[in-house]
Length: 188
Image (tube, rainbow, N blue to C red; front, side, top):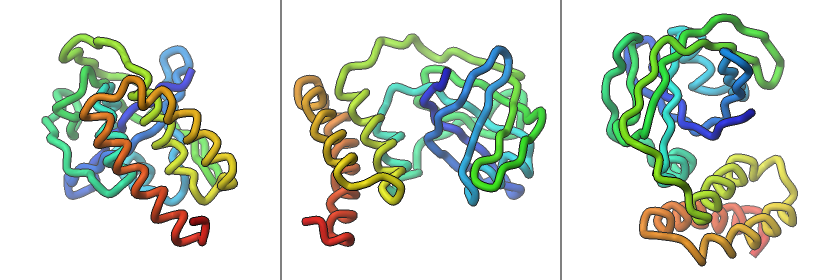
């Protein structure tokens, strides 16, 4: 199973980094597969810790992909690090082992502490649409434009029916990146 989460890590100087990432869950293992090069990869290898943030505010996912990384953080309890203050829950991880790879090393972690901050109230279709659009944004250079456009057209249907203010803001940020990409590639 893959869970779409937000990973927080810190560098050697204690500076936090937030990144949206799909985490693979296999029994007690939480597998993080960052692409090389990445700040998350460097930080996790250096500190051997990370935090999985479970969050329903899709603005944070979209914000991280559009240069908005200044989200409120709180200190963790058992590892040196931070969790997103707006998270519903978070799990503090320790790195167990690394399976290196040229493109995406496999970082196998274990939960050492988990906290539930407030209940999950459910997702609406707009939140799902923003998450999927954010994943498309992260793959603009990997996927053909026709695939991206087709997916966005479909996602827009559910988005327009169910979006609230947070989802609209996140969607607008993502669509601005799409427009920049189209312009840069001569697709307009």
